[in-house]
Length: 343
Image (cartoon, rainbow, N blue to C red):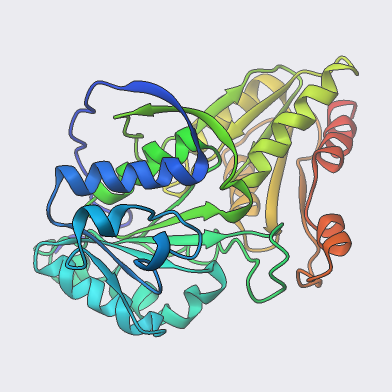
């Protein structure tokens, strides 16, 4: 039996012809679910309140009418239980998509996410695939308070056998979710509640490459790597930096595991400078791991790498002004990027 340091690669089917449309982030997720369900009868959705009125965040609108209650399954409030049910479904040939209403509740299914889903393929000697996608609704800006505002994107990144992906735009949400559902390994798919109303181009039919970051803006002076809502804010910061004569390259990391260090390395070798923008505590997160990987790999820094992140010891508050002050904004990203670029 061979060890699985990373999940066994999944050969992606060629994407069908892609037509571009302007969709909201919410509708892009819905379109990805619809396209995968229409193309594969093994795909089904399970989770809390996902059938009624299109789900709490309306990402499943119209799916119950189209596919019926046999493929859109409401569950009790028992995350560890219904995630275990999804594992059983996957072992029987289905491709369940599990919705977690808030990322903060991922630890309630800790046994399944840590001890079952990512280890089952290894323990079976590669005989069993575990195509389970967990849609985790992440992030602040919704005024939901400290128990409903975490991103959770780095909580499970150390687990062999598990993929972790983050979606920052309508186009990436669509293509990444389709890639996640088609993968034969368990995937944590993080979507940001603060982005649901954003509108952007979506290539209907596109399927993202597993483990590949995307350079969303070119530049030569400083590299900014971000995920989720921070990608949008990093791009706004890059616009502001132009007025100072600073060209920032912005990379949407997309996959936290497997992490595309090589794309970031190529950028940093040109700019010599790195800023990571995270809606999470920096300690123990993907930003710290990325900086460590690059440093151990011998990258020559022109300036010490920097991080814009959440405070180490401050939970996300309910108060709108306090929440806005806590979560990194474009102004704060630009301010730190100026300091790094001028070092």
